[in-house]
Length: 439
Image (tube, one colour):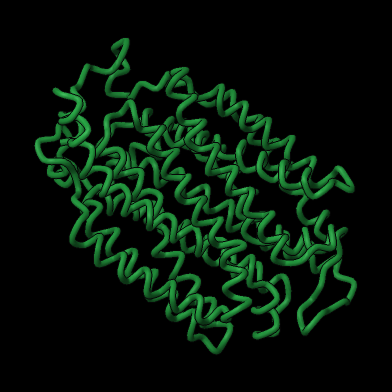
């Protein structure tokens, strides 16, 4: 196969993956958006930290509850129909959010957004598993999460500036229109799998619907890997998407726009770290050692941010970036879990890991909200409660604890040496021409 033909054969997979990655970009923007709307929503709906934490948690409850169905639906019906439907659901939820006049409708809209968003990352991973050679999977996943983190970056300072200028309702109206256009593009462009590929969706449809779920749930490694992923992921949405901006405002007496810009460096770190760890893991033919390095780095970075007083702004930028960079190593658990299960159950195994990730992200915010309420000293500004730096320190102290437990789990994760289970009786996967793998 000539180099020209090889490059050409990647065009359609890249286009299809790009559409799914844009959806993940959009989903992550929605996920972190409450962090830059805290004072507006608290003022407009007269709520406290606990109620706001519950709003954030509602998204993750919806997201987590859909992860197992997402995997089954993707394995059974393919990416085109499921991702088109999911993006349309996000559009409806965003439109409802922009028009809501009561808090219960805000919560219901956020729940609806969570339902649709649940398909984004697993849909991307499923497309990567079907359209690209196995040797590129970790790198493609790293690039996927990088795109998602660019969405998170956009959901910080840029969205904060837009909301300051035009209001949160107009922002979500535009987001709804964007999702509607994206869903139409998905319907006409995405294809479920390459023609003449050795993987057959037909074979998956003929298999018992819940067989993949049974296979995944019966594996102890599924649970160990998913628990690690959940513990490592929870600190990012908690700090980056919920309390990070207001913590920095109160602890360092800086503006909201600067705090949002600084918080975005967590996601810049993710954007750089994901492909870096993916490339390093594939190069070394190891999954566990990069995860161990990432976990140790995450623990050190967040501990410095929370417990070393009077950091300079430059130091904060650096350690927020490092917090995101090292946290991104958790994406390797998706590659690990995929390699430990048959490829026909790839979406189900990946969605199970993501389920536990989202459960952790849903459980922790209300706990931090309760802690903040406990340490509230009665101050308010423009009708919104203001919490002291000490209160934030107490609430956010749960983050290093979560990462410490994740560090303890790493030795119990099986090393796959980057070899899928189908090839575990061979020294290396059978040689496939790249054209066969993606055309």
